[in-house]
Length: 373
Length: 119
Image (cartoon, rainbow over the protein chains, first blue to last red):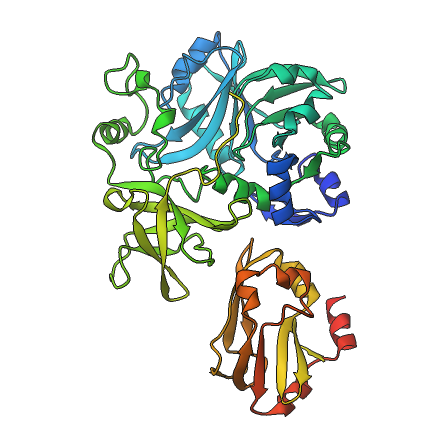
């Protein structure tokens, strides 16, 4: 643990009795005293506070938002230029083969773009942007914490300290004050619940986190429950469900690629891997990310080989994320299957400890999202 | 009652031995969501994998602590794996084994020795 990076909330986690583990080079809380199951259920029932300060926060600046936006469109297949001030979008960096280098959130904050990227990818992302975004000033923000407050009571708990958040809708971003500190808030998250992500100057991070935790509705939540929450919500974890070997179309992320960037659109193509991604959008991919519900109680974890039937010699795909869903009260997995086997209701077989166990292809998400649109 | 370094407890009961995991082990594993038990009648050797338990975090094996025959398993755990967290030393035993050589029990720790090991 000694060599690991610490977030501004490290001392708080330790004082709350968190079990700390290594994640992407950081010492992070995997769970607190309540445990993964209770933390998960509490987030869906009330509100959970997550430290996501390990993630990369980046500001992209040029002479105007539009300059940054058009440059960024050279690296991601998403419409950045059409993003209105005060709004945020989901996107991903693609590589020349049409694989995914990282997934991310980016916001139009008036004269600049604010971006949040995965902890494990942030160094590569920064290098990638610095190499390809000529004329754009790229600044990694290293003096701010990032927390997420998620769940049906998140708005009430946060509005007690920052009343302006009550008027925000899903994917709005806002600059306001909490306990005298300037905070950058987005109404978003990665749990399928309504909620917020809040960028806080590191000097105020613990005070603000403690003020939120003082609210009876709010419990601290570790990475364990963060993972089961995002899996129930059908959301991809980079490095598991998506990576350079998966295209955005295979991953079912078509919704994030607006018409304007597709064939026939005003700013079609022009991003790495456009040939493959545009043709997969037009003709369909050969395999797809799907949800899987194992028929029994045995979880099918990451790496579980998937077979078309009980005797086939060769697997047709594998599980990329798998766990027990505390809200679902059943095991759940995501993985890749040939399109021919990807229709919900199809039975496939996962090999668990040498046994072929049936699982049914299911619609994602497993638990419906409850965003405030 | 005896304890193993693998955090199992063994409780002799007439001519069989009841096996479960300790409170410390259940706490370390976290919320248990799945238990797979051996079939009654299975002959096992010491250190054979005979139970699979999965928590929200990961899968782990429970090894046969002694040689013998599995004579009874706790089917209630299949539908209610959370019992392992709620009552690991009581209701949530895993299986009963008829020892081939009861002296194998002698190698294991007493409760106070086990407590010293985990403290």
